[in-house]
Amino acid sequence: ASGFISRDKIVINVPVCTGRHQDDESSTPSLSMLNLTGSIVICRAKSGATILDRRPAPIRRGASSNSHLAELNSSGEAPPIHALMLYPDTYVSTSKRSSNNLVEYDYAFDVSEETILDAISLSYGASHPMLKGGTIISCMLESIYAHGSVFAREGAIADPSEKLRKRNFLRHLPAIELTAGIQKTYIPKQSTSYFDDGNTRSIPEMEGGRVMIQIIGGNGDESSLNSQKTDQIIVKEGIK
Image 1 (cartoon, helix red, strand yellow):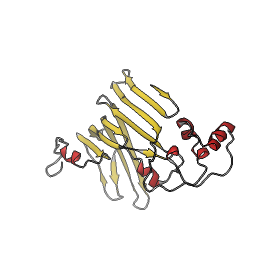
Image 2: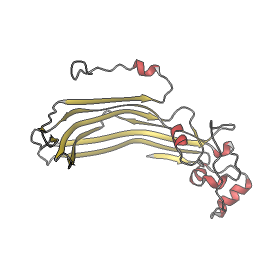
Image 3: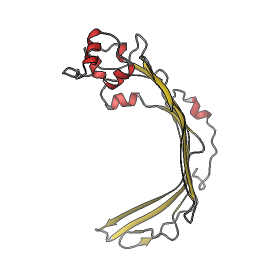
Image 4: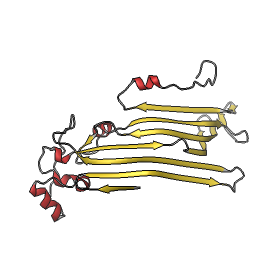
């Protein structure tokens, strides 16, 4: 990673972040990989910038233990961007926020098509004392993949002194264009999976299952969803 910090801007670049796990010693060799690139920029908001429906957060009483921060605050000078992020309440001396206390941010991260998780085993078990039965299900998920982008919405502005509340959190949800899926799901034939309601025991079967999920939203362009051309995989007649 690389970047810099100045009085009015913080920049972090991640040219490539790769994680890799390979097991050649097991009876079934496996390979999992994560490949991620992206960048983050945080800067002081432009003069006159505001956040819609923003209410002042309560003032924190008590002086700062850092005399240097207190001196900057009393002078009325705009604080450094990194200090504003770390000590937001120190620079909010009145209930009315100014643009000096707001930050603009932008980020974008891309997950490459090389990202894949070899396999995951899921197991679920429960007992039913009243029915004198139980349930045990074991399932294998193989070749889990994901690729796409996650990025900030255009013109995103934040108040570092805002409290973490639901309405504040939802305002900063990212835009996303992500595709994820599982190429093969099945219940191993040698597993002990069953449903038992006390009267009847059923043996579940699943083989050759596939899952694909596409998440698109937050970019303000509903037509982009309709413009996406995806192949429809018929799992069973009438089900796609």
